[in-house]
View (cartoon, helix red, strand yellow):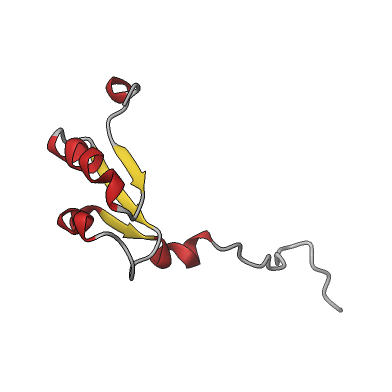
Length: 81
């Protein structure tokens, strides 16, 4: 909260109710962007009122995983005559 005046929106990563008052305060002051919930199947019922701000880490798995590198194809490939 020390940096409160220096940012526009906050992203909170939490699934337990200890952050309820912080999330409530940020939402009330229009500074809450997302609440990233680590487990979509297990989070505090105190946070349910903020569901419209939820992003579940489970849903981000594909975006966050390293993808295998593919060979680049280009004009430097030699073809047989």
